[in-house]
Image (cartoon, rainbow, N blue to C red; front, side, top):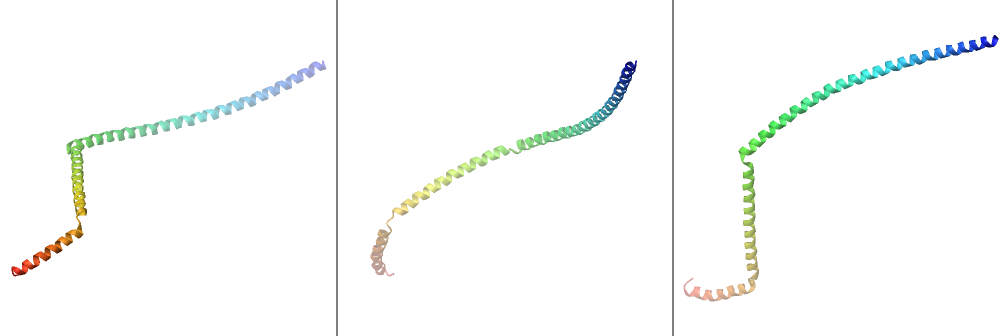
Length: 144
């Protein structure tokens, strides 16, 4: 019976160890449950805070969009009333006409310069000198 007692003692000791290990495991599960619950609470609070902030941002964005829409309508009204498009088109036409006139004037200047370049200055000087020689005696004759 000694063997039976030893076996019973061994079973009893193993049972105590198992019970002790189960108690430790149960304590760890309780700690993990508390930690997970706290983390879930923190995440829930963070989500609530973020949703409130996102709601505020969305409200501000909607307000800004409404203001932009009003400003766009006002700008369109001002542009329609001021006929700025017509004014700009007229300015473009005036600039184009001025450019054409300037081009024609420059062509005329080029033509005049070509004509001046064709004049033989030496021959012209000689002709003036000859005319002076003819006119001087006539001027003396008429009393000048």
